[in-house]
Length: 327
Image 1 (cartoon, one colour):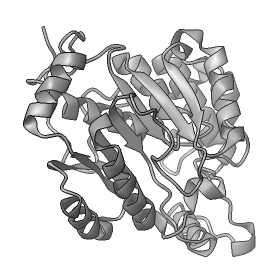
Image 2 (tube, rainbow, N blue to C red):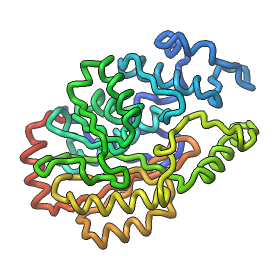
Image 3 (cartoon, rainbow, N blue to C red):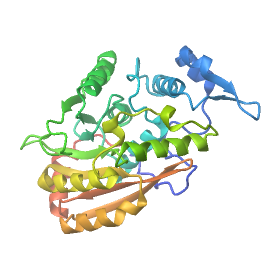
Image 4 (tube, one colour):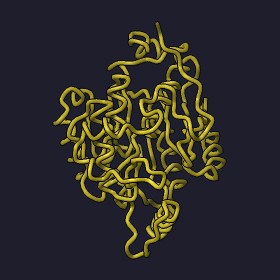
């Protein structure tokens, strides 16, 4: 029976209904999947077992354990200092995107290799292509400006040959561009994903990191501030911060308007939305969606837009999605 898109979440404590990471982590199962995680389990104030989430190594091993236990992804790791994404939140983006595709396809989520996603800034972690490949069997193009990140992504794929056949890696040839120069003139992709850099400078990034440490009950001097989730400069900082990056993304998207069905990106700062929505109107986007997303105390949203009119979308679906299996 076809699986219908689920309602989007509206509260900060509820993950998407299809997200595999409901409730508390099963630390026993996770340490069986990744024994190296066990030394990082500590006793919480209430006497229960938890992880030291202030320790970057513990956070990285938690990801490795989650990906092994829940998705059968083996030998996942990232170089020291690279961004370590929270798997449950990244999975929520994948499921929200699947719902968006389903809403565009008569209520049925199209799956399988007939659909291709473009992951902008795929990073050393390659998290969106890995999750999307496992959950919906979509194909992916993972793009990054950092050759070392792409080398690590290639290592992960070599360790998981069952996923590698559906994931292609490309280096962005122009670091100042977001979408330009990635796709050939005849290439089509069904959606983009993006978790943009959100700080305009290293000083702002460090200030945000210190606030996070205080929220975790830790106090650190600026000189020794360490991010428990890591992050290279290009993963966290860009000219103009999140707003500047997404303005460039929208401008680039208009240049390949007919080659992508849905452009999507996360937007962490609500204050950036009015200008982005106005820019999309200026570029004559045909449909713009804003989907709330939140985990714990973190609030974000998925911004999606398309330049295709209804007739073009119907033709696209017939050509690429109607033959695809549905969930």
